[in-house]
Length: 158
Image (cartoon, rainbow, N blue to C red):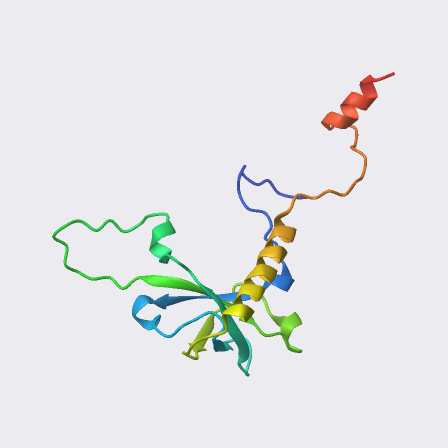
């Protein structure tokens, strides 16, 4: 019963269902007018009706800056490649929220305009707090079990 997995291979994926958002990779020429706080219409193939959301932030760099194989542009190269910029969009909760899943494909329509910087700053802080809580090391407060460093130290102490 069971199976073996090579060292370093992923066995399980987990995500915080309170921290679902859309990350849209917009072409750089579509960015003018996109501001934090702008309303967004989000269409997901898995749902008949669109969701609503708002832009939380527009990344300060293109996705290519952090790619595993960044594009190397040499002098004399004249082919222009449109870069994509990640834009994080908060999904407005409604009765369908529990059925949302991480990794679904989305199509977004962002209303252009001045945005709402105060709302976006508050939403970004809330997302950062959720991410920090989700990524924090577990501190259960339970005593160490035999076999771990603290348990071995206790066992050796008369």
